[in-house]
Length: 85
Image 1 (tube, one colour):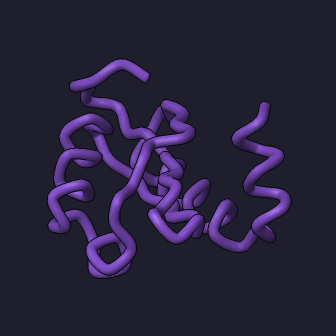
Image 2 (image 1 turned 135 degrees about the vertical axis):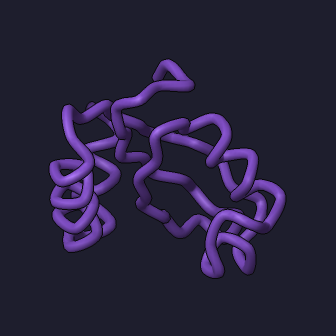
């Protein structure tokens, strides 16, 4: 999970209430700091604190958006399996 980078990452955060949030970013660590400050997304701002639990580099922004949509459609159980490896 290296950052900063010019290639995008898909990432999953665990929110304070245990829910999972999926997003994309070019710089995961900077994006995480925004989420932790309550400025990354409306959802995470109301579900603080957040922790990064998974991230994967993808070759293109278009692929990152496709992967984000795919992951968001997964059940919670399948997202946790993905995180577990």
